[in-house]
Image: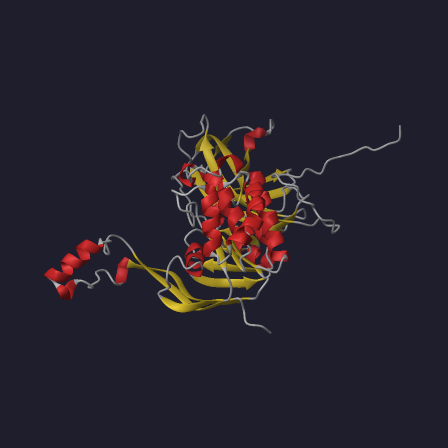
Length: 421
């Protein structure tokens, strides 16, 4: 077997927190060297509470042509890892071996000179990748057409909107034929159509035998695009392997089993009147689960405790995609047969069926119990639990037919009549 195109060995990155290490100009450093040579390189705050390990002993290998998804919560170390692989920052410990040209798209502003035009930046980036001017010219029209920035090619990129900037930056990174393409969540800046276009291009890049590292909170994109997935948590790799298995483990990582009910830890913002105790996603047979098929209704089971008598309260369930897109908010009073609740102290359970056919991907549930009258953004919640439980919608139905995603949030199981005229 040939050598891996990427080798990461015991990689660690230490950051200093706060203002213990202020940046100094070269002039200030030289003046200090003249005044007090022994103190020029003294470093304050070199340990203890003023340091933070963004990565700790991370090791993995990537073979040529692999598409690797990297997932994890904010602050897990994903962006730090990509910055080291892109040579934007140096590791504190460990080493990285790269066997090929690297093109990176890490954040808006990376890789382009703001004073140069779009045209000039295309040639600059190609030169950085080691391409000849003739090679860049061959790809030039394709890059411009993909980015849809023809009118602004001779405008300095500092005048571009963030969306225009990302479109051109991605087009350059993907079309100039690097052996390794590194993409961070920056694609979320673009509009939905351009995101789909970028994901399609990354698939084409991968089919061409090039290697892709893709950081994203878009779980369906990771599951569909990647051949392997790494889950980072607190700077360490918790799990790697098949994307579907890793994603499901990640989505259910904050959950535990209590009396047969899969439930999240309830880190609540409760008052003294009511607080939520547990929540579960149920399948059609009322068994606790974390995965549903796309055509299945969503059953949610909730337990809560009332500590003091309350009057006219409403229970609310909010479903969001994991990328923050609101799917729906369900109030128990939406049903005309249900009225605001007057409750005495004790434990209660609530079940709600949400008749949605959601597109494949990851979702999270928020819970709230609020007094009536209440207006959005105003008034006191008795309890509010953000991210109470996560669940995943599978791509295949019970019959094994593909859900055939076409974009959007829901894919209703529509009823048809087809007959001869």
